[in-house]
Image: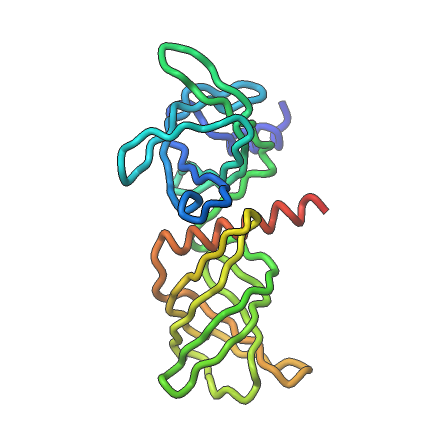
Length: 227
């Protein structure tokens, strides 16, 4: 086994790790629910898990063949590893187990707090600097640590300014999220069009809302890889 192959194999989830799961559903409420499951086995083609449990209610969730899932697990150093998968079967053991399609190592995205994935994306963002100054912009790229967006060059905002924002995020399954956060301008760049490119870092954002943005970034990255 080459050094490269050995290294990428380390990215794959291991038996007894906890897998965090969200179902890619057209039901907006269903797609927001996070489930947890223990990995019972890893084969050449599948990741085998126990029946997922709703973190909030403690109820088990029945999965069906073909269900598309967005998942992550936590590796060494607290690094989160994200991948998408689908249900490919089930296994009858002492307990009922679910077989998920095993991802290729290169399809697993690692997310560290200081090194968030960023992707090009045009999303609508509402920005509030003060009760008198509120406006709409369009993002140029989006990541788990911040965004950059284009806005009217007449808006008076400087580096260090703090703003309240609402980001409109759309997913492949058709669901939509309005994600609130407080951001700080770390750079403002004039554009040839006369507009400005503002680069924001997240100052206040809940972990759950950050994960929603990371989920969007992961979906976008997978789309780029398919082209």
